[in-house]
Image (cartoon, rainbow, N blue to C red):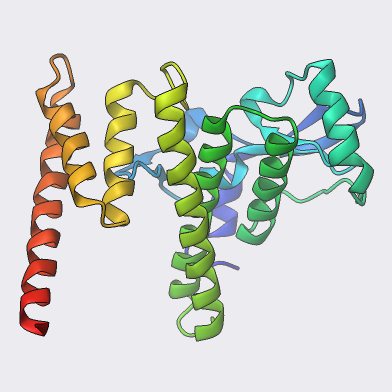
Length: 259
């Protein structure tokens, strides 16, 4: 049992739904979140959502155990004939069917596998780069959750496992950043359910993580100077700008000392 989330408590926020696969027409069980019961906590700086007693991100995709088709819940029922053709050629033809699960809860390993499969499907169907990028971001968030769980296991996770998880999170986060940056120049808003200012804030946080300080500062400045932006988002952008200035100054000071 995870020491980060109590499984019996987590089950109170879940239910099992019988789903018809849009690709192969088979029925299977899918674990869903009772969204009306969720109690929101403060999100991470990069907008990763947090709730009491459950990491709802684990349950964000629906994955068919028979044909391999996996997608975010909101888009699972929407397949064109061309997408179905691509799925069957590139995913189903290589997928090893498994038995329908009777599980009532998902661990991080299973959730990550399902999201990775959803990413493979999105790439195979040539979905917009924003959808691919957001799946990469969700995978990075899930790996962050797994890392937090490992840290809470009080030494049960080996240093090697921790490093593997951190490296994988970093790779997925960079892929997410590259694709979402591309989406900002190619797609119309809303993107991934976000308006332009919220999306700019997310990109500001991500560019800050990769030490692109000038770009991150420009994103923050754009948010602060835009009329009609909520006070909460402006405050977040201002706090992030302070963090960027502090980090940039620390790097410059460290560089002058080393010289």
